[in-house]
Length: 349
Image (cartoon, rainbow, N blue to C red; front, side, top):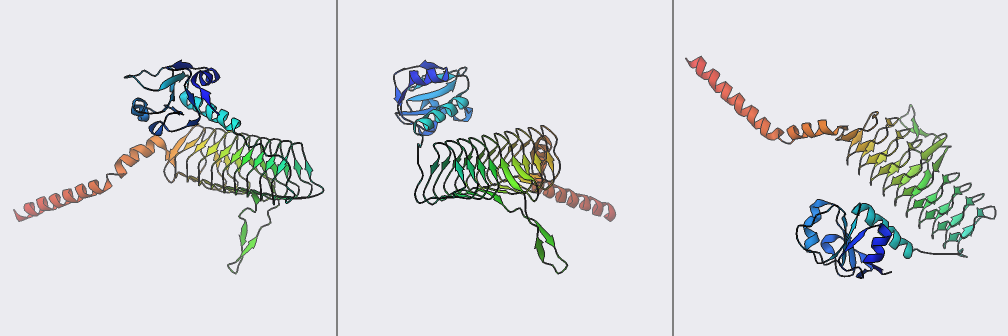
C-alpha cells in the first residue's frame, strides 16, 4: 500500500511540514531511511540522523525544534512513538493474511464445535469437545487437545501446542512453538533419592488480548489454574510455571522465568532474563531491569535491579563502589604497606 503525507497526517491528527503529496510504501529506522520510506524520531540519541536521512517522511513530536533545515517531509504529532505504532498497525491491517477454509489434511474431531469463518491449516489437529469462536485462525501443525476453549479472533501460528482443558480468550495471538498446559515441574523426593511425579490436574486460563511469543511455555496448574489476565504480553522463550498468576497488562521480555505459585501484579514491566523465585507476591507497576533476580515479595511501584534484586537507587550507588573495587583494593594494600613502613621506622628508633 502507498500512503501520502497528507493521508498519514489526517490519520494521526498531525501536521505536515513539507510536501503533502509525497508518498511512502514502507518503514525504516531513521539512520537507514531511503526514498519512499517513513521513519520516526522519538529518542534524542538519534536526533542527528534527522538531518542526514534519505527517508521521504519522518514523524516527530509537535514540540520538536529544528536546529537546521531538513530535506525530508515532517509530520508533527503529539507522540511520535505512539504515532509509529498506529501506522505500523494500519500497514499490517492492509496486508492482513485473510486465510479462509479448512484444509482436508487437518484432523477435526466430530464433537468439536467451530464458529464462523474459522481457518484451519494443513495437519492441524483439533481434539474432542473443543469449542472455537468466530474468525479464529489455526495455522498448519497446530495441536489443540480435548476440551480446549478458544475465543473469537484468536490466532494460533504454526506449531502451537495447547494441552487438554485449557482456555484461551478472544483476540489473543500465540506465536510459533508456544506451549500451553504442559505439566508443571512437580516431583516429590523419595527416601531412595529418586522422585515421584506429582500429577498436574489443573489447566491454563488465558484471558482476552494476550500475546504469547515464540517457544514460550506456560505450565498447567497442579490444582486450579495458571492464569494470565487480560492484555498481558509475553515475549519469546519465557517460562511460566504451574499456578502462576500474572495480572492485567503486565509485559515480560525474552527469557524471563517465573517459578511456581508466584503472583505478579498489574502493569509490571519485566526485563529480559529476569527470574522470579516461587510463592512470591509482586505488586502493581513494578519494574525489574534485565537479569534481575527476585527472591521475595515486592511492594507496588518498586523499581529493581541486580541479583538478588534491590531498589534501583541503592543498586546504582552500590555499583558505583563495586566497579572500582579493584582500585580500592590496591589503595588498601598501598596504605597497609605505608603503615607497616611507618611502624618499622618507629621500632628502629
